Image (tube, rainbow, N blue to C red):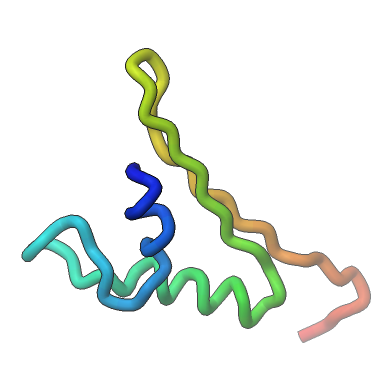
Length: 67
């Protein structure tokens, strides 16, 4: 993923898939994680031998919380 794309991927309606995507998936995902006081991260690399993108999310754990 280019640096320019990385800076925009969590914007609503941003997509690189033209007509196949609507650009709200990552935006919604970040919103859900944010509401739970978590963290959604992304890293991307485009090297000849090793390229790819990794998303990770972290959610806080509260052992005393009950539903």
